[in-house]
Image 1: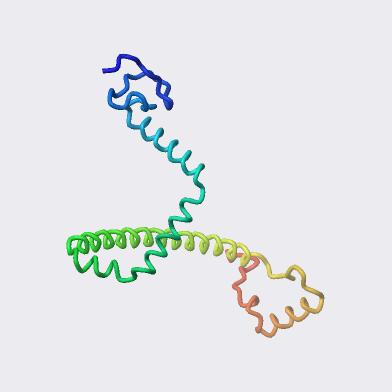
Image 2 (image 1 turned 60 degrees about the horizontal axis):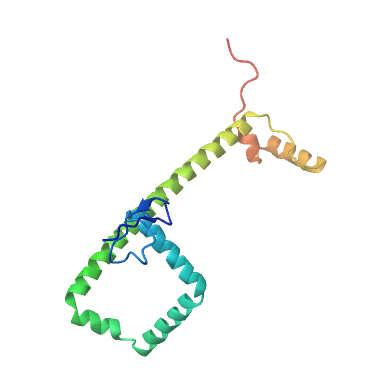
Amino acid sequence: MSKKLKRCVVCGRRYRPDPRTARTQKACPRRSCRAECVRRKNASWLKRHPLYGKSRRLKIRAWAKAYPDYWRFYRAAHLEYRIREMRRMSTKRREARRVAKQTAISRRLDGVVEYLLWREAVAKQTAMAPGPRAGDTKEDENRSRKQRQLGKNPRASRRRLPKELPP
């Protein structure tokens, strides 16, 4: 057993290394430190081998083209794999539906809120006296006035409050 204490490269605490791996162990036995050490090591390796993922994907695609029926035969020969995969996909689809429903509900609520805000804005506008709209010319104002008098303008069909309330 090694009696020499080492310092953890992640947390900085001193620890007694595992005697089987004392020469190479860099992190203390705490799970979080070990995981961080592995994460750093993987990031370092990927930095030194930037094309690994791309070349790996190309090799896998080439293999899949060379053996297009592999998975069909594998599933036929391994019933337990087929059952396990069916259950996994069923759970995955169920989870996806649950998320989709939540999204739809939140969208519906957003739509309801937008509608209520729009309705409030429209209600405030209808309470105002109808007048010329922004950008209207004199001709547009005269046409609107004539249409209101003839009853053809939908703006004229608004209920107007009486000027004086009955006693």
